[in-house]
Image 1: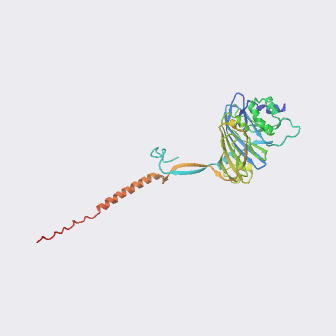
Image 2: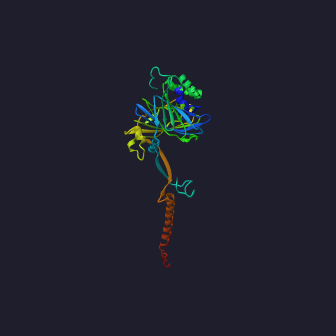
Image 3: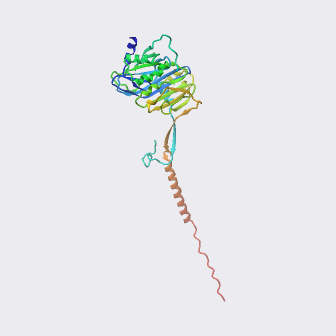
Length: 364
């Protein structure tokens, strides 16, 4: 009865999202277009600050996030994503070209370019509600389960009308004795559909390895986009693509949280005062049904720094004048000067008198 009262508000038909099992209200839809998360790991404890961008017509929704150990949950700091976005901005590199292109003058009139978890204690119930919090717009419940059949029955008894494929996707987590964070979210304005970027949530749990849960994302019906900011002692990389495109590192480098300029201090509050290595990873999942596991992240062979370069092509100019115009003018000037010099040299050439004619004496 207590369990039913605690999580009855999370009940709805199940749909998929980029982070786990998204559950919108009945006869409505919601989709996660992008999932951006900050993952901080010190070798013993992992923190995930996750932020979702959603669209749909659902007035409320909930989702389930598997975690390898019992997790604490609190609101995340939106300023964290702003700070990391600035730190990982691409390096702008200007490349100049000489001859005008289609968008330059005179063509266009412009010269600019633009496993593991701890075993439950003896006698623990098959499904247990281990915590319940109200965090801003979120209603958060934390679940533990030791039996996949019991977990499925509990979900059914409490109104989760789950398809068989979701129950199957949950089984590996139950077998590994993972726990679950169930989160309900309603818009701040009653009656308004969910949309845009949601408030971030921060999960914290013990872990001797860096893992990011992705297995439930295989139930998504639309392509998924994942962005990860990984904070650890070394440069980190996924051990495999887990069914998506090859992960792309867009930034790698050591950062000092104390030296973040114009920040809110969110990064320092998350990681502490010591420098950490930041790896930014982007990955696309055009066919989510091919996802076959969770992201296991490991240290790269070397802490090689990297920064994406963004090239801007600009027409080469001198004092605002296209260099090609100056070159043509210079060539014309040189040609005209050469012609004038030739003409001038001809006018100044002296006229020689006719050669004298010597008449031989007459013959006698």
